Length: 209
Image 1 (cartoon, rainbow, N blue to C red):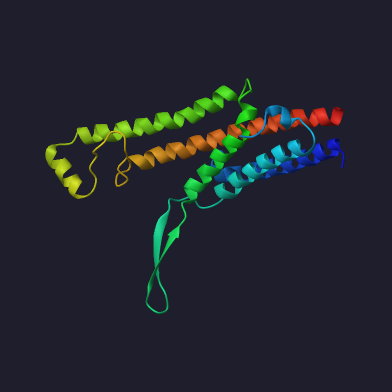
Image 2 (cartoon, rainbow, N blue to C red):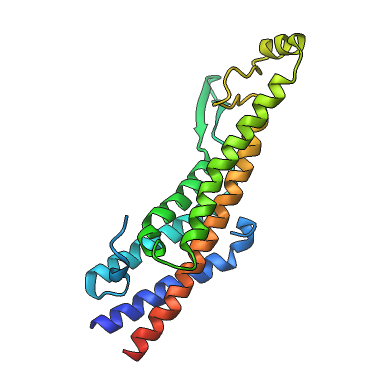
């Protein structure tokens, strides 16, 4: 297979994966690789780069289609009356991890984009901002309570002893996680839009070349 045919095969594969993601987009509510030159290169390097991108997209698609929830322990009683504890994986964390993988595998491509770089980096930084915001909100709430209220909540395991940590028995970490998931989805969408634009330009170059 010559280089041009190989490139066209890669384009068709990644376009198909992208169309699958678009078809399932409603399930998402919106939804260190080589240099960008290798994106437009030939032979094994181009194929390897595109394959890693396709694989990252597929993971986002597959993990995002699952029921997203935190990890938890589940106890079942077997036929002998023994309690069997099993851990249900944190599908939400896995989904966000797959988006983080997409960010890393495409970073050296979109970092040189005049259109996408600043927008994507601003979105990623927004996660830190929202984390600090909800930690501050938790601290403000705790500071506003009376001594008696604090004593009662401490007995319930709902005290706030640090401005730098969430108490997971309260709701502030959940508020942050809602923001975090929303922002990660937005970042994934931006990267996928970037990939789609690149594929349009790349396909034109291959067909003309």
